[in-house]
Length: 309
Image (cartoon, rainbow, N blue to C red; front, side, top):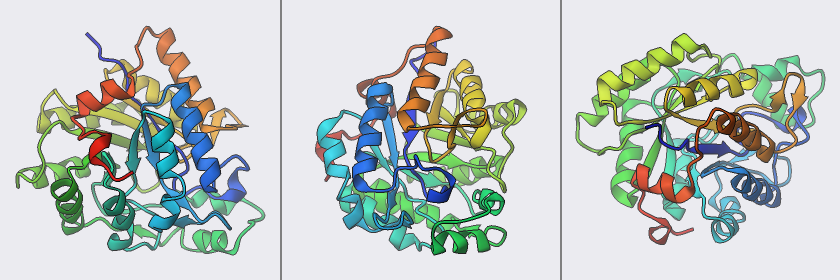
């Protein structure tokens, strides 16, 4: 039987900028409100980045995370998943500072170095509100998102072995699955494996059903059929690819980190709007939605009592 679908909501991210949407949550208060509404709408996991409260630029400062994580933790049962991807220009130590401070149940872990041009959309905007957005636009064609084998192993050791954290393994291309297989051969991480297939980012695999199926079948050959797999798709591909993946027996991720829209030419006014949309689609397809408790059990998380949130 098909298992209930785990919905992850990626609330703000580090690639979209304030000039792209007035609805992008930037302040701690906005991130709190957006997160709680997303959980009420059906999200079991919250994937969280931090933003500078003054100008909205991505930040790795754990003191900023501290302005929203405790309240989210106190007011909802969702699984809190802190990024280790951070944002452009951040060092690995900076990216790990907040996860090591708060020791969450789950973090993201990107599976390879890549040309990450997810903010090429800035080149289409006639005007930007902040100087840091102009700096983002200037590096859009030269930025490399670094995650070497040693970087990935370091995250596994410091967070996995050091804190009992489980990972949302973010896979942007088929080769990333083989990167993970090589590291798992070293016995530094045990199943279950939670894969997040990332489709449609310039520099990564395309947002096409054939590509999704290729990733899934490759993952099953490498890791077996008991994996937990989810998908996120950039921009206009979000809802279609999530629906495809759910029909394959997988899970889904939505949120303003991945797409600023809820329909063609229609900006999403909240993360909850996207969560509600995908939940309605899945429910109409006779698929059940996983609760946070069900997701914790399936992903074998350590539980909130073992965190420092």
